[in-house]
Amino acid sequence: MIDKLFIFDFDDTLVSTSSTINIDHGNGKTTRLTTSQYRTYVPNQHDILDFSELEYLTDPQEIRPMTNYLRRIINDHGQHCVFILSARHDDNPIYDFLEQAEIPLIDVIITGTSDPYAKAEEVALLIDRYGPNYIEFYDDRNDNLAAVNKLRHVYCNVEIICRNSI
Image (cartoon, rainbow, N blue to C red; front, side, top):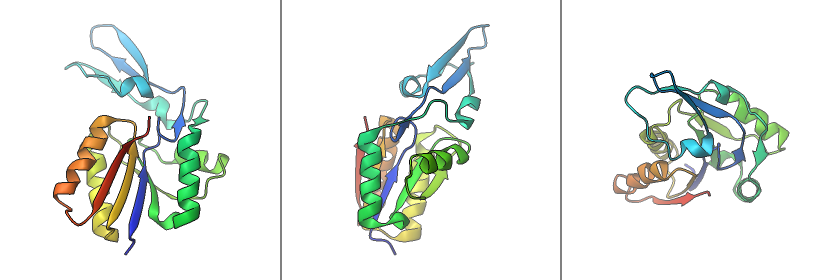
């Protein structure tokens, strides 16, 4: 059992990159969105999304207030209760970033989808596995925060704090 869990999104929470999501609109037009622009993107029916650039970290820049907070949490509470929860398809770029930024190794969970409920499901699995009574969840997307926040109705004995990282 772990009393407290601290869960951080990766892109635009801990790091900003110049990686883009490419969108083929099916009408001959394409759009490139940064990860922060993707936060407000509303898909059209025929859009085809290409996340292949996210397989790499292109020009990664620490978001210092959040990475400093992450380091402090690891220092104060230990690595065992801190997680990165990302919509990426591959965790290797995240582990590479942690190593380059000299952040102690922590568990990384990838969902492979931008569906907010996938993140909520992963948080629910962490609650079921570790039985915490307190969770802090940090993400830059309001839909992810809302999905995780709904877990309060299922896990009434767990204090779930959802914070926007931007």
